[in-house]
Amino acid sequence: MFEIVFLGTSASAPSARRGLSAQVVIHDEHRFLIDCGEGTQRQIMQSGLGFKRLNRILITHGHLDHILGLAGLVSTFTRWEAIDGIEIFAGRWALERIHDLLHGVVLRGARSPIEIQFRQIQAGVIIEEQDFTISAFPVYHRGPDCFGYLFTEKSRRPFLPERAEILNIPPGPWRRRLVEGQAVSVPDGRQIHPDQVLGLERPGTRLVHVGDVGRTEEIEEFCREADALVIEATYLEEEAQMAKDFAHLTARQAASLAKQTGVKHLILTHLSRRYREKDIYTEAQEIFPGAIVARDFDHYQVRRDGLLKIEAVT
Ligand SMILES: [Zn+2]
Ligand SMILES: [Zn+2]
Image 1 (tube, rainbow, N blue to C red):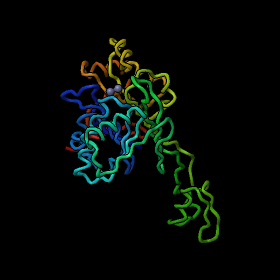
Image 2 (cartoon, helix red, strand yellow):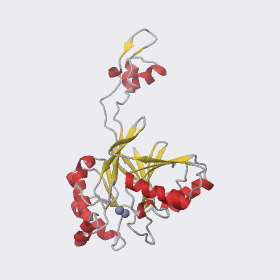
Image 3 (cartoon, protein in one colour):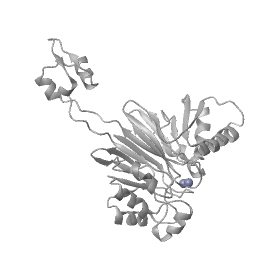
Image 4 (spheres, rainbow, N blue to C red):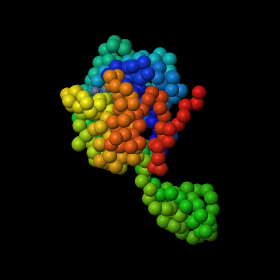
């Protein structure tokens, strides 16, 4: 299961209700900030997430509405917050711009009290943890080196406790090693193979995050049958030409991508201030019933068996 918390859902400029692009993806104790538009640090506080363990930042591309918040966030981290260092993952062009912002403006040659690591990414796996991976894939937008991110839980075979009982396998290290896929000898001398107590392999949850993007053909393979797709819907179809000119999508295009690729749940974000949320929603729903338009502070659990909205505790 992954969780996603939307911190900013507006395109280009903030509105009274929507901040600029930023979201946090959570998997157990791991947290990833995706994009960091202006005002993100206040959104983090208001969301109740706090700054703890928010040290890995994935950037979709280098446009200012996705990176300017790094200046304030890093400035705070270097003064007050108990964070030892941050890693910023992005394509080459975005990293250069972020480097200029942080070292040219925020630090101006001073040594940073926290370690700032710039991780230039290419398509492929960029982060591998014990039970999930994050892969980057190229997306077409204005300017070079724009990426989407695919969060994939590793598939696993569930432990079947009723089988273990029948086979009289005592609790403790024997069961743990079987879950890890190792054969064991139990105290009475019998050899037990993992196949005797593990069920069929279950694929893990897949969450796809696409930031700004102007074409959907190249990203279909990464979206295919994802449990959830988070993607921009900056324009409405009535301004499809403008969407094309600025390399963005209409709500209809985003919904068509989700439909064609068999995505289970679609969450739209990065809305232009020129439209009402309802119009984006209606256009997407015509193609993909069940499409959701994210609002700031929306919090979802993305699971194999569905999408669950977590209500904020107030
Ligand atoms: Zn943008
Ligand atoms: Zn952009």
